Length: 321
Length: 261
Image (tube, rainbow over all chains, first blue to last red; front, side, top):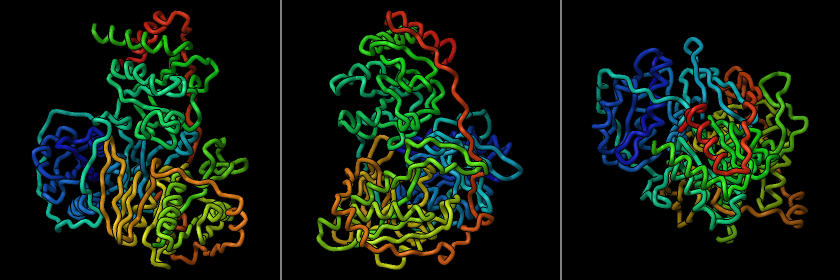
């Protein structure tokens, strides 16, 4: 069973979600996988992928891949697939991965199983599992009649396992010149390049219970204490208290962090859909009947204007130990 | 400038989900259906482009069983000019490639400048069909669009990625997938609802569009089964009367029991 893994890098750093996909490929294959790494100035990053399970990394290191383009990056994956003829292609379900996967799949006349939270092999067929219908159900999916199996993995779900061993062999990938029609002309960081909720291991979210945008410092304090990303409910995004980038839920981002702390969030279905698969959920809310407590692991029922600062203080105390 | 807006008619997110006896689909008995919210952003943007220019048309297309027509009527009521319904006969699962092939066939029938999709169809949440249609038609695409400027034969789109926006320029025609933040969709007016009854809905049979994957045996992805998620363990509630004591108990549990901090 041969796996080809698409490796994403931004700003000269390999994305953790790609290392998770690569480690998963090694685990499923019971041996090394091959990888493809497109970008500019990325050759130096390739050998280190050996530790995560790559025996060979096809590197497309070119000026015309400095910024993301669908054409260039799908082109690199396609060139690597032509060289390797893999049985399966794994891609992390990041913004880039979600852009690459459908175009690559359609080019090969197949579909893709996506955003998987579990993946196993039955013989040489992938069987995945993912939440559907806002997390109210779980679907077991496979690639049906497809010869080439394409799957995307949800970030932060599978472990990225580094093992001591040989470096990956680095092979320059030949591909035609990229003249993309849709071209990224610049990248604008939002709000001082904050950690995005979809990449975060810990998220602290605020909802209506914080009563107004002037009270974000309360939530920010706990967020900083935990080294977390800042999330928000739809209600407060719609009210204009914070940018949509922070929204967790059905019409926002779907996240699976290790720890999710909901501050003053009642837990509408559409919010639970976005964070219900978090490993540990803490709810801070004054209303003991709030639906958020139905999915929470731990909860404090009380005035959040008193509990949040105390929790931040207690977190700082144990972290200082 | 002409737009084709592809919409999915999906279970309302507030609907209760029950598994059907076949174990692979949902029981549709009590489900309320809505136009997938992200598709509404695409429709709204297409309507605004038509209104700003004073020319061009907005066509909506949907694929599904009979009920999909109700979704199309809703889009016509909001201001779309015409609709195309691809009749799948029943509500069974079609994979993304089959869906994309059917919609690509419809998109080829008229010269469109914009092909709009939601960034995902709520329910399946796959985010596959839009870019697949672009690939099948050999068109550029920009996914997760939160802002759009339309020039002559070109667009500049702001695309949402992790912690940043990519500013993308593309020639038209182009496939775009709409993300929340792009606009605030309008409601249908009473006049719109009345007018929608007179607007045409062209009907096509999926079987006539030449989509091999529509045959379940040839599908390139399948749902083998669906089940309700395992119930989470009951919450450990800590009374908040003494906030400091509650906080230290919570942090103790997080550290010693859950081992997450």
